[in-house]
Length: 397
Image (cartoon, rainbow, N blue to C red; front, top):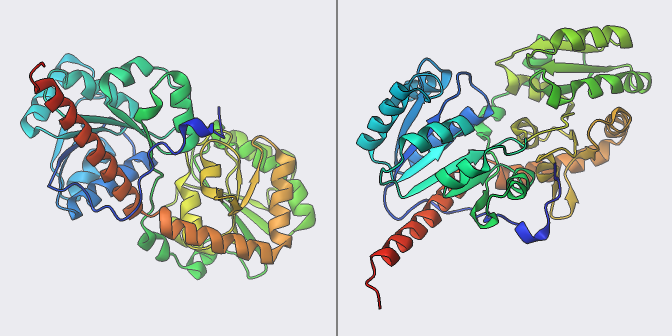
């Protein structure tokens, strides 16, 4: 996994802010095969809403019975559904029929399975631009399909783009668009409400981690760091917001380490803004990470962040040779412990990091920034497609 891509492939066509979209209304089809609601689905919702606000027509093609189809329908978007991941003959035929009827100018695959299903289903249809979103820093397994079905890929971080380039996807067809967060959601958080929900007193220092309890999030390394942190700061409380298959294993680890009075498993929470407002520090211990939008949440409200140098996290916590938080090697419990204690014992540095991070987030990492940059790519790819079409129609000399 490459964290620092070579200069030869930067900046992956990252477009400036302020672009309000194509010169005329565009028809965009967003395709998702996901059953549950994750970060990628949140970004697709924000994109669809942003397109609609700018006067574009956006239709949703989604898995029947999935959370994405349900939520986007509630938000008033036209939603066309198909069975499962869209691979069966019946699902492919249904998807092809509805795509042909909608006749999009932009086909936006929101996940890898959507790329395969909609790529097959749309073969032979006249759709000028086809793009795929790529949000994970896992190895790209099906580069030939991406080359076949995608004019371009929108990558969530430089690390993700580098992985795609190394797999053989053309660098000039890679674009960088960081996730965006709606600031209004985070500003709704209430510190007092959040701390009361965790029964914290004023002397407690809350260290918050918002992540699914799964291997690549690296919780085991964070827990291994806790005894050293507790020895220096017995007032620390680590709150883990999220569910996952490793919960029992991690709870057993906490018992072995003897830090059960300092670690709380919160499970799935729908009050993240309150918890983030309640936090004194946020920590991300991933050893693989496409970007991590919960870091952006913390940055927007000025909560200092400790993170690893995994995947796209350095895109957020370092900018133009400035540090915006504490960055440590992945899978290094000692480094995590030292960073957490340093952040607690260096209040002035914490305040400065938080200030710089907040400025960056409000400037570059809001949902409006994400929508503007995505539309810029749509516009550029549409112009390329139009140019290529005109070139094909031009008479031979």
